[in-house]
Length: 102
Image (cartoon, rainbow, N blue to C red; front, side, top):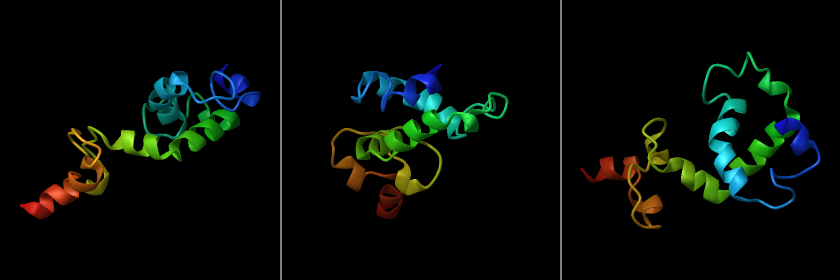
């Protein structure tokens, strides 16, 4: 159903990026990109070309990239921001920078 919706629309709710995209990306975007759940192969998510396009497009957004860093505890230390209290934390408080201060 989502793939059919995105065949005719740039975003979930039409041609405007909305809270619907923000809410669905972590769940279904992660599924189609192979980051979550082992059901991706069972569901043939690679065949969902419009969902793949949508996820790729959203993952290119700087705000989405920053948001994916918050509370992350895996991957490259430079991509982990365990706590965010200020916008400058993205430049000064990632795990690689905290480790360098010790």
